[in-house]
Amino acid sequence: MKQHIALLACLSLMPASAIAFEYRIDGNGLDSDLLGELRAVSLAAPMAADDSLATAQDVVAAAQADYARLVGLFYDRGYFAPVVSIRVNGREASEISPFAAPAQIDGVVVSVESGPVFTFGTARIAPLAPETEVPPGFASGVTATTGAMRDAATAGVEGWRNQGHALAALDGQQITARHGADVIDAELRIAPGERLRFGDLVVEGENRMRVERIRAIAGLPANEVFDPEELDRVAARLRRSGAFDVVSIEEAEAAEADGTLDITARIVESKRRRLGFGAELSTQTGLTLSTYWLHRNLLGGGERLRIEGEISELGSEESEEEYSLTVSFGRPATFYTDLDFYATAELSRERVSDLTIDVFDLESGFTYYATDKREYSLGLSYEAANVTDETDGSESSYQLFGIPATALFDYRNNTLNPTDGYYGELEIMPFIGLSGVDNGVLSTLDARAYKSFGANERVTLAARAQVGSLAGPDLTSAPANYLFYSGGGGTVRGQEFESLGVELDNGDTVGGRSFLGLSTEVRVKTGKSLSVVGFYDLGYVGSESFPDGESGDWHAGVGLGVRYDTGVGPIRFDVAVPVDREDDQDAYQIYIGIGQAF
Image 1: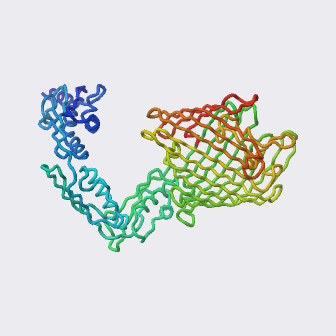
Image 2: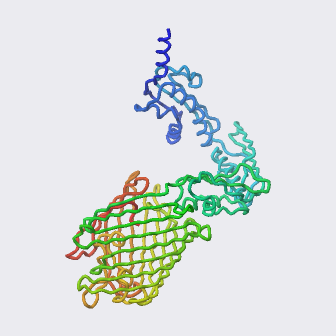
Image 3: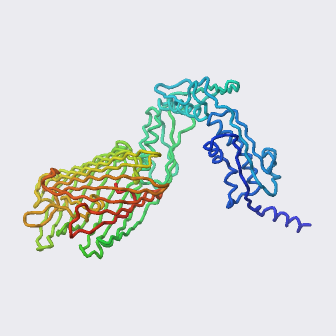
């Protein structure tokens, strides 16, 4: 007997076999879009697939849950008198005990009748804070939906929260359906609560990072009137520091006696150290190897130390190796919540035309984050360089002191795959020649704009303008790495990398003191993940300090490409050809990368 009981217990623990069945919705004249929505919200519908692992008991439970889901969808479309019947093997699902499900399920048939569309009779929400905008869908004579009522309640609560009433909430609702008239009367009541101020920032989850530094980075304005947008800024600052994997900001459920509301920051610190490396192979420039080591919390206050190195053009037949070694330090919230300190030291070797430039650069300064879309930086720099002319072996050197300043505006809707908005970055660096170079100003501007249109905004127009200027030193005495070239993936596709410069009287080609680049793209989505792109790039390099269009030369490139959206950014493949190709030029250039070209 005990053996039989044990056997039955074992059998009861074995999973029931999966089943496949027919699922059908009889809509009694409903349009196909609504029928599709009903099927999409159903829990039972996907269980009808052949590869489903659902058991008979799962199907019955799902069918019983579908009553509320289907009725809820009707309510959200303005139908407040629907009739829903769900039959499993011919029996109403609501009458089947989940503990006595049939052994086999042959079909689930859903019969629905929408009934008439209801409109709002009375649509009232009160009290409302000043400047609160009630959604237009919540008004007399408009189709009544539960979504409109939810949106109105949310707007009413958020209106008060924006005025400092942090604990505002929906206090009550009276919703009456007048079936004879097909009308919904809805009255919503908001309880604003008292106007509150920010209290303490309570930190939970800290490990190695000091709590006072977390509070300094977060910048919660204690004793100031509550503002929900300020909580978004607190979260953004903590994430921007790069010290945390998880940041969650929560409000206390009740206010303190002094009229303040405490805020809790729940965090998970990132691993302190990170090591990375990369490799890139180009048929034109050879192999590039890079690596970095990062410490995210060097002194317990969110300080970042990064050491990175790169060596490029390994195996290239056209040039010798280039390298760079950079050490950078950053500290968030230095002197001011949105003010970050930075310092960098870089040692590099760069090949420009027939010149080899060895540079040592020191820079430090501050970056101010005005908003999450605007930032400004100002620093001081020292640069020393030795320049070797490989044609005759002659050497020269220079030292300069600079004041680099940057303004960045990023209003793109997506960094790697923008379809709307604009981006602008202006860099200006006045410099004083300490030796070997005259005083001057180096300036660059990068402006981009995006606009999508058409059905589902599947067509995107993208445009980019780049401007560069070096004022002060002439071409023969200017720092070679401050001069401008054109050609390649970052300027004019289809033209060889840095193929356009300025020809001197002696026949040598050097970079110009001015640069103008114009690029346009038409991106067309042809599927869920695939897009095709057509583009035209134009570049100019001149000998004067401003691109006047007369002291230099132009070149252009045109091409086609494809993009495959991976979810984290599109994989880019472009093929471009030069316009007005010369005999010694390559017929085409190929570019592969992640993210859009600009």
